[in-house]
Amino acid sequence: MKNTVLLCTIILAFILFSHSQAYSATAATDNRRDTVEEEIWALEEAYFTNLYKANYEGVLAIVHSQFLGWPGAVPQPIDREESARFMKQLVPKPTSCTFKIERAGIRLLEEVALTQYIIHVNCSETAGVTKTQSSRITHTWVKDGACWKLLGGMSYDK
Image 1 (cartoon, rainbow, N blue to C red):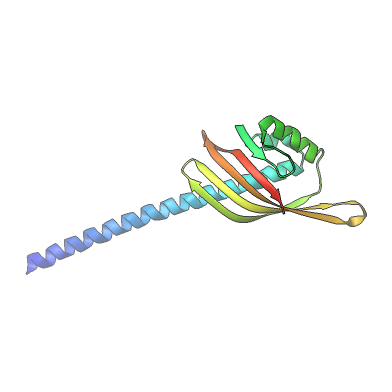
Image 2: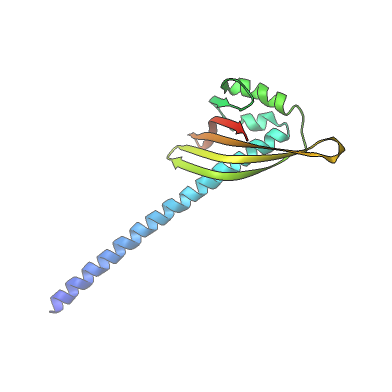
């Protein structure tokens, strides 16, 4: 009887220990995922902050060398260099525009992240009129060494 109780106690202890280890590993994975997701969303914010400040170098610093994107305002996809020219035409000088990113979804798959969101941009025009434009955006981010880089994107004006 003592041996049976001892055996049951050992088995129970083993099961509880295994469960706590699995829970700790899952919690660590969830925490890492949350951290990476917030890092990606911060890069999305940085992209548009730099764009509306006309800091093209700041934008290009987070854009992958093999970038391919398709802004809603152009007839075909553009590469990184064409994107730089497009940005300079879109925002030729720093603006007082403000923006808000309405997160719709994010997916992480090891070294790849996909974001989907709506960006709402408010720009003051003459006579105190504010123009608001909203666009749906999809961006694909890839891990390039230690940094995340924007590999591609597509936008659609709502």
